[in-house]
Image (cartoon, rainbow, N blue to C red):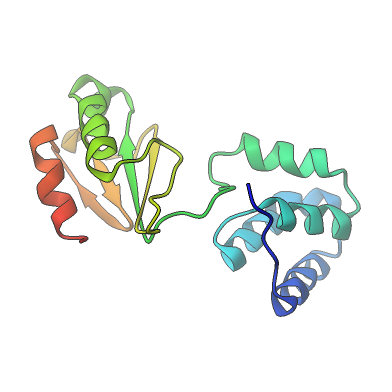
Amino acid sequence: MAKIRIPQNKVEELRQICKSFNYDKNELINVLHSAQKLFGYLPAEVQELVAQELNVPLAKVYGVVSFYSFFDMVPKGKYPVSICLGTACYVRGAEKVLAEFKKHIGINVGETSADGKFSISCLRCVGACGLAPVVTIGERVYGRVAPDDVQKILKDYY
């Protein structure tokens, strides 16, 4: 993966974030949340800077980022598509819905389309089991999604 160059003003903002948490190693998750809000994701270069500022090993920062599902190491698409694979959704065919999204967008789970429009991820539960299977695109929730609905849903985003 190509290295990114962090603009100097963003470097300073990230340093201010670390300072606002008093460079406390125990605030690593909070610092990472703030950094992800600033950058939209946590590329290696951001993780390196956080490790330096908090004086923690880079391996620890990477371990936290890679362990928690709410952190992203690649940028999300403009329209992040999330398919619930919790029990109710799975039983009602979410896996087939996921397959349709992958086919129509042309990417796999964890990837972002080349045009930056879409990314696909899976969730364990969105708390709308009565609407299973459930798909979210950004803040919008789609319930009782069937594989045949996918193309129609995506049409709204092209």
